[in-house]
Structure formats: structure tokens, C-alpha cells
Image (cartoon, rainbow, N blue to C red; front, side, top):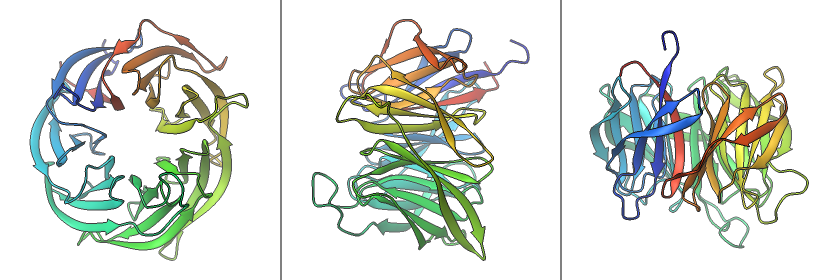
Length: 353
């Protein structure tokens, strides 16, 4: 294995009867499979994130957030717990200097900012923003729901997707006080439901997946005269023309080398993969194919892009596939793996045994 990276995968799950909400797997890169090596006791880990320096892992829990130190072998050492003064969050991320942790609250439409300490532990709340407004007075889309919070790569602005109000709020972050100031709004179509946001490492392009209308909007981003500007460059469906009705787009992830962007569709129960043109930010669809499970809540390519894993929330499984990007195919790779209510997966390179 000399010269080849070894990986672990962290999978966050809800915990009905099993108190271990984070499962840790060894990654078999050659065969495209996962083997459980450890688990962490935490309630209802609806989302996890790794700090940009890759030293710490943060998780949502019923009672706020928890922080962990990532050991050399990929196992986790509990650091601390912090409350968010609200209902359980659905998403969290850090800024690029690891000074702040941002939490999105779906249930109470709230963004919470917490200070991070150098040792990775979570400190006090520095700001709380309740999203405001009235949307389409139908189904759930009549009030704000924060579904995703991500910093721009220049570390100047926090983008917060409001899946209920059909827009992304853009806040300037005060890096001294940890306060947010609304400076822009990226507006989506009514009843489109922007769910997740990803930004390329070069900071030029932003992708927003929309749950209800099953498409991705691509934006070019620049900062001029101290203000952010987002220009739409593409709108592309996450589905085939012949899809199942009542579908909802869910996941949004880059491949490790950022050649590809991958998403998933509940209802249609499919994975969709795009090739990224890094010159203009546009996406070209490679495949949209079934994942042999119900509600692929998260989906990810293995770090070498040769395999794919789908986390099927409703069927309580992970399904594995071998990918052929040239032919635009995925082929089932072994049996499904049982795992109760999986929510998201992160691959992480490890240095030790």
C-alpha cells in the first residue's frame, strides 16, 4: 500500500433504538466497499462535517452540536458539546479559518453561529438569525426553513439556503464578533426549494440543488468593491426525461478531484452525475441511473471515482456501484449493506493504522 492513501468513511444516522449515530468504516478502495470499524454514541446525527484543516469532526445532535478530534487511524475522540438555543439542526459547516461553526435549523428556520477554539472544541454562540417571510401558502413552503450554510471560498460571505422561502441569503461575516449582516439574496423560482450548496475550490462557481423542481442552478461568483455578485450560468435537471413522478432532489457532492458533481433523487430513486467545466462552470450530464434503494438522501463517489455509494434513508441500506464515466454507467457492486436511517457520508484520508 506504499504511496496509496488509506481512507475511512464517516456515516451519520438517526438513532431509533441504536444510540450510535456515527458509524466509522474502513474503505476498501480496490473493491469499492466499506467495512465497519467503529461507532460513536451520539443521538440523531442528522449531519456531520470535517474542519478544513481535517483535524476535527462536528456533528448535529438532538441537543445542539458535538465536536470530535480525528485520530490518526480515523477514530474519533469526543471533545465537547454545545447548545444552539433552538431545535435540532439539519446542517453545519465551518469557515475556512476554523474560527466559527455555522448551523442551519430546518425546523425553526434559524442560523446559529458558534465560536470555535484552537483545540477544536465549540464555544459560545456569537449570533442567531431567524429567517423571515411568508412563502407559497401550500404544503410546507409557507415559512422559512434553513437547510444549508456554506462560506464562500474567500471566507467573506455565508450562503444560507432557505428551502421554505425559495432563496439563498448571503451574509457578510464579521470575523471578530462572529456577527452576520445580510448583503445579498440569490432568488430561486417559487416552489423550487433550494436545499444544498457547493462551491468549487477556486471560488469561482456555486451550485445549488433544488429539491422540489429537481434541478441545479450554477452561478459564477465574484467580489467587486467589497460586495458579492452571483450570475446564473446554467439551469440543469437532476432527472431523465422519463422520470418517476413526485421526485425530490437531495444530495450534492463533488468528487475528490472536483471533476464531477453528483446528486440524487428520491421518488425516482436515482443518482445523477455531471462533468464540471471549470472554465465556465457549466455541467454536462454523464448518467442518471437507479440506486436500488428508497430515498437516496446522500450519495458519494469513492475518492478514486471508480465506485459510488448511495445512502438509502427509507430502505435503511447503503448500495454500492462500480462506475464507468466513459460509458456513463454504474453497475451494482455486491450486496446492499444494512444501516438504519443513514443521512450523510464523508470520506477522510488517514495517516495511521
